[in-house]
Amino acid sequence: MEFCPKCGAVMFPSEGKFKCQCGYEKDITDKLKDKYRVSEEVEAKETIIFTGDDVNTLPTTRVECPKCGNMEAFWWLQQTRRADESETRFFRCTRCKHTWREYD
Image 1 (cartoon, helix red, strand yellow):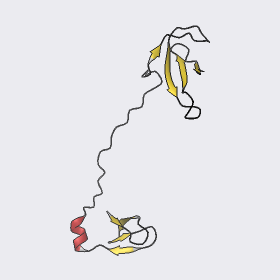
Image 2 (cartoon, helix red, strand yellow; image 1 turned 120 degrees about the vertical axis):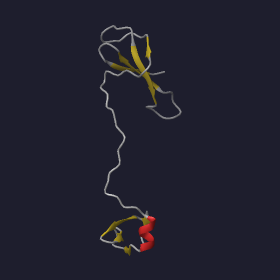
Image 3 (cartoon, helix red, strand yellow; image 1 turned 45 degrees about the vertical axis):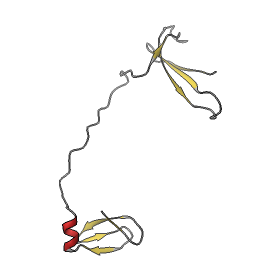
Image 4 (cartoon, one colour; image 1 turned 90 degrees about the vertical axis):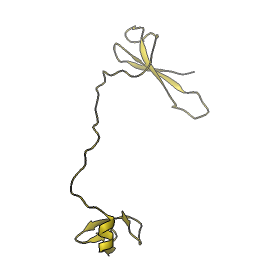
């Protein structure tokens, strides 16, 4: 990669020159051609798999849901107040998906 000596941004090859967004241009010499390989091919990207809400990766505990009375819920901790105060426990019912919180 070539960086612009004026603004420090990455310069891209275009029409036989490295060009910067600030307007600076630098000729691509034979020495620079040997240093870089320009390719139009796009290499394979990582595959991202999206999952629905039915994938349950949170831990569960036995606690009664205030909405449906189910005795199992997912739980997690989250810092919702100042750092010197305790975390808030959140629960989500495994049956009706109702979410509630519990403070210390």
